[in-house]
View: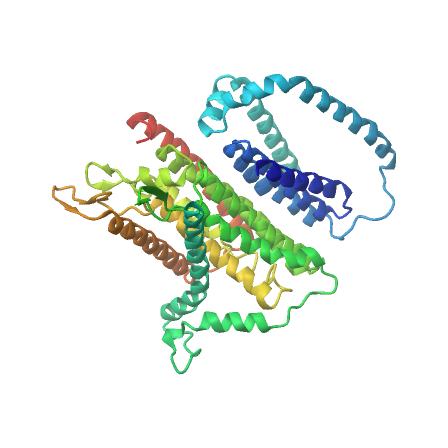
Length: 164
Length: 362
């Protein structure tokens, strides 16, 4: 039962990721990404990480992707991006770069198999355990992330003010 | 088998409750506005001469919408245009699932929590479903190949983001006091009495959050005074190209969202299914004295209380809808980002200070 569910959800995730890459229509691509994020959230939930799953849906699918779709709707009036691709040369780099990333992932996931299996049950998926880890063991990276976000926010304010 | 039956019953109750409330609201909307404006309101639809205060009008509306032409603009995006109303209704419909409509029901040695789905992070679930509903509106706005629809979709997205942040930040105070993200626990935490007589409902412990949440919640339903995505006198909105039942589904989604927001307000701020002084084995007055009541009656009373509270909240939201004029687009944005959001952050800080001074979660 669980294997079948995983298979279905994983297939949806892969298919929507392919849809995101292959569709020329920007809105379609963004909506495929939303489906993909939702499928990944379902995978988190089946692994017992309920909080992570819903946080993913709220933050990524519910907020960030809404902004993405909003921006696409504002900036791209036409339905399809056609005509010659101005960055055609860059595409040649995509295959080696993607292959490198894939190899890295393979290396990391393959090398970590033994430790990952033992680490996950101790962490758990509840809000309490995540919060405890965030504010004790991972406090420094957590605060660093917030500084990074703050810097981005200040930067956006600066850019927005300059235009007025 | 019985487990499956119970699960089915729980889901069916919530589903039928939300769906029927949504249908009824089309009638409430007309009748309540009529009473507020000293009119008679919808009362013409009749079956064999019975008019029943116009209660047949939702039925007549449904028949009318189902038999209308289902029009699609030639340049519309076929798939998204068809999908959009379903996405809208779907997320509005499933959002209610983790809102508890009663305490635990004990029958024949079983304990049945009275909510459709028991989730440890139920409040996040409702919140997530509410925020996903906007995709239906955005898809409709974009796929219609109509500038007014596109404008409506953009406005809906901007409105939703600003409302959502205020909703998320304002429920944090309630979560801090309840000490849980589980809706059932949050409702239970509101059951104890402050100073021995005052129920610790969210509206008592979190008055500011109540106002902020309700305002942002009404904004999330996209209804007047926050109906900038529609704005029937300016842009008509994201559903300008829709007709028939697909149009009806967008209207339906707004009503369903109203029910969800009312249910959420009830659960977070009005004690959910709690009745003051009613505990598991009967009524216990703060001045002494108690009346014993059987378990089944207590549960029925609590479910009844939940329904009454939801209806009262819907009534209030309808009052607002027929009282206030529409905010201008920039006013709505300003209210969300410069009014609701900072105040909800302030509320979180105040709640944290209060919990530090007067002890942790009850």
